[in-house]
Amino acid sequence: MKRKYRTWLIFILTLLPLVVISIILSLSVGEMNISPFQVFSIFKTGEGMEYTILREIRLPRIILGFAVGGALSLAGVILQGVYRNPLVEPYTLGISGGAALGVSIVIGAGLYHQVGSLVLPAAGFMGGLITIFLVFFLSMKKGSLNIQSMLLIGVMISFVASSAMMFVMATTTAESLHNIMFWIMGSLDEPDQLLIKITFWVSVSGLLISYMFVRPLNALRLGESRAKHLGINTTRSVRILFILASLLTGVCVSVAGLIGFVGLVVPHFIKLLIGNDYRMLLAGSFLGGGIFVLFCDAIARTIILPNELPIGVITGIFGGILFLLVITGSLQRKTTHE
Amino acid sequence: MTSTFLDIHDFACGYPGGFQLKPVSLSLKKGSITGIIGPNGSGKTTLFRGIIGELQKKSGSVLLGGQDLLSIHRKEKAKLLAIVTQDTESIGMTVEEYVLLGRMPHHKSWQFFDSAEDLEIAEHYMKLTGVIHKRDKQLDHLSGGERQLAAIARALAQEPTLLLLDEPTASLDISHQGQILNLLQKLNQELELTVLMVIHDLNLASEYCDFLSMISGGKVYTQGTPEQVLNYQNIEKVYKSVVVTRTNPISGKPVVFMVSQKSLNNKAINKVNK
Image 1: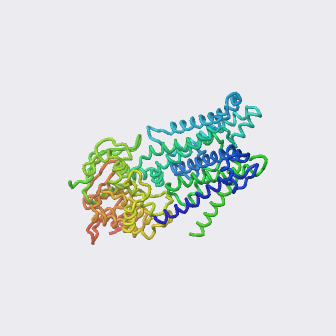
Image 2: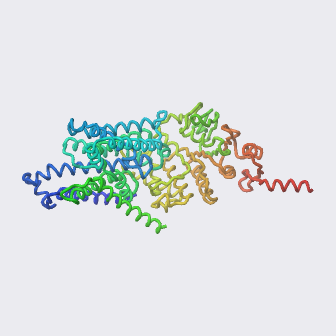
Image 3: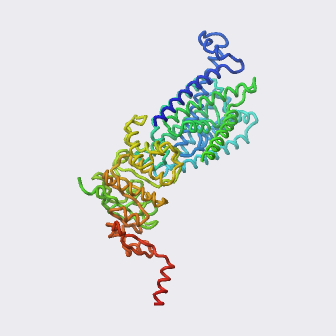
C-alpha cells in the first residue's frame, strides 16, 4: 500500500510538469510562432501584438481546451465506474446525440442567424438535458434505478437522436448542412468569454464534486450489490454521478461540439499507468484529459497552416492509434507473462 | 446477552411478481455455524437475500442482537454483518486493495487514505486466510479457492459479528473446501463469529454446521442438528433421490451416500436371484 501511494506521488509529479509544458507549447505555436522561452517575458511586459495574441486568443482557448478535455475525461471515467463497463464513454448515453440534434434543429430552422451567438450552445445544452431526463425516467422502475437498462436506453436514445439529426440534415439547405457538419466536428474556437468561464468553472466543480463520491466509486468496482453490502447508498450515488457526468458532457458538447475519444482513451491510459483506484483515477483522468486535448489542439491548429483542422479529427486519429498501440502492447505483455 | 443472536421470526419475502418464500423462523445462537440446505430452486437463496435486505419483506422480522436488521442504517449494518457472495465476475485490483475495501464501513466521513489501523487489520486477515503472500497479485490471477479466501478476508476486515456466505465451497476441490470450512470453524471458535451459510454439499454441511435448516418448496421442511435433519427419509423426500446415511467414524456426524440407478437395479436383480 505504501508503494501504491509512492506511485501516486510520482505520477502526480510527472503529470503536473506535463500540464505546464502543454500550456506553454499551446501558447507558443500557431499562425505566429512565439518562442516558448519568450512567453513569460511577453506576459510580463503586458503590451504589444504578441501579448494581445497570447492574452486574447490563445489563453482563452487553452483554458477552454483544458476544461473540456478534463471534463470529458472525468465524465468518461465516472461512467465507466458506474456502469462497470470499460467501453462506456460520455457520448454513449445519448447526451451528445441529443445536443447535436438540438443544434441541428436550430441551424436547420434558420434561427441561428437571427439570434446571438449563445443560441447554439443553449440549443445543444437543452438537447442534452432533455436526453438526460429521458434516459433517467425511462430507466426508473418503481423508484429504483436499473443500471444496465439505463445503459441500453441511453444507447437507443442516441440512435434515435442521430437518425433524427440525419433527417434534419437531409431536408435542410446546403449552407445549413455545412454549418451542422462543422459544429459536429468540434472546435475550441469560442469567442464568447462568458461561455469559456462557465465551462471552466463547471469543469473544476465537477472534479471537486466527483471526489465527494470517491468511496462509492471505489466500492462499485465490486459490483452494485457488494457495494451495498459495504454500506454504500448505491442508488443515490449512481444517480448523482450520472447527472454529474451528463452535465459535464452537456456543457462540453454545447460549447465545443463533439470532441471524440477523449472520454474513452484518456481514462484507459491512466488506468494502465496507476490502476483502478478512483482516489487517483479521478484527478489523473482530469489532468490527462486536459493535457491530451491541448496537445491535439496544438496539432490541429498547425498541421495544415494557415487553415485549421477540426480538433475531433486529431483526437480521433491520434487517440485511436495510441489506444490501439497501448491495448495490443499490454495484451502481448499479458500473454507472454502467463 | 441472550443466547439467541440472530432471530428470524415468521419472516417471509419474495421477488416482485415471482417466487415467494413462506414464513420462516430460525434462530442462531451466538457463535454457532448454521447451514441452509435444500435442492435447487427451493428458496435457499431467496431466504439469504431476504435476510440481507435485498428483497422486499412480506411479514415477520429479522433481529440481530435484538435490533431490527432491516431498519439499521446501511453503514452500521455493514459493521455488524459481512456477506460473501459467489464471485464470478472479474475485478481488476490487487488482493490487498480488495481486502482493504472491507474497511470502508469503518472509514471516517472525510477519510481519504487508508489509516494505519486499516492496513494492520487487512494484513491480519490476509495472514489468517493465508493469502498474504499474494497481496500484490491481481485478483483475476488467483485460483478460485484463493479468490474465495480473499473474499472471506475482505468480509472479515469489516470486523462483523455475523458472517453470511452464499455457497462458499461451490466449485472448489476438496482441499480448498476443507481449507475454507476449517477456517470458518476456527474463526467461529476464536472470535465467536456467528456464521450462516447456504451450502449445497450435504456431507460438508453435516460435518461443519452445528445447526441445519432444510428448505423445500419455499418453506422450511425441517431444522435441527445434522443428526436430526440428515436422515435418509428427509433427504429422499426433499431431494427425491435414493440415498443411504451412515455415521462418520471420527466426527460421529451423519454422512450421505448417493445410490445410482444402476446399482439399485443390480441389487433388485440379485435379490430376485437369491
